[in-house]
Length: 64
Image 1 (cartoon, rainbow, N blue to C red):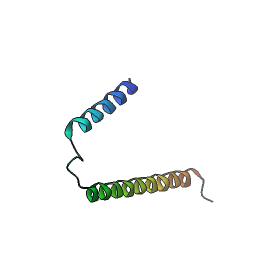
Image 2: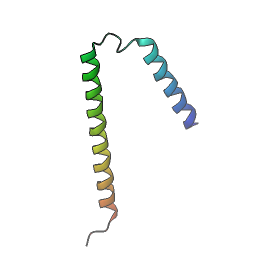
Image 3: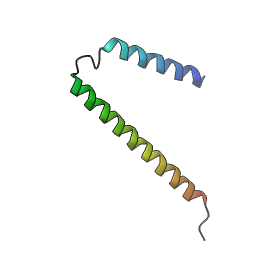
């Protein structure tokens, strides 16, 4: 059941992106800036994921 929800979400996102025309109005500088912001967001999310895993690991180890 979960995989069907995941698939339908992916298809809906793909459809909306293809039909919205988002990004076509951007200049070359705008596309570059948007790409840089996207990379920064991904780095931030990766950092948050790493810290979360570390905190979870710290909670699992018994304190002396």
